Image (cartoon, rainbow, N blue to C red; front, side, top):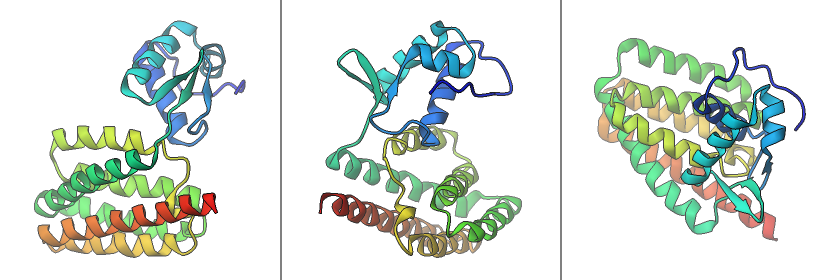
Length: 220
């Protein structure tokens, strides 16, 4: 936790610190249950404790971090919260795919194809594939051309960072997920909104089921 991270620019305000803390949570550098200490984060980013303190207050208000006695830790999702999150995610992501099928530019579809082809090389690396998965989904969000939907999806994906493991770590899930991405992309490219929505719902349903199986395996 003491290693300083080079951010490329200095942190000037709590908003900068907020984004940096979110990034280390999203990247899995500090996972659910991990402690967030003002002094250590300030040293890590090379800033004073004031913007870190304000950023942590904001994250606590949003439920991304929570108090454990006197400490702040990254929040985690229980079984019911995970299910609720996937319901909302599937609805919003399905809408994004539907709108992308209606409004995506030819160039945006080309970018999605390129991302999908590059991602095939990552099928045996769950961590890298998880990052690539986020990029692919985010590109669909942008292709929806609905700023209000994109805002809501940002909040959903922040909450997804509170899940300790990626479903892509399950055996065979990487190849399956890429096949599901291809089905989503083909529906978007063919300008078939209903099919794009349905393909996205099927994709996230399978991801949720896989995650439940992974969690069940931890109990056994």
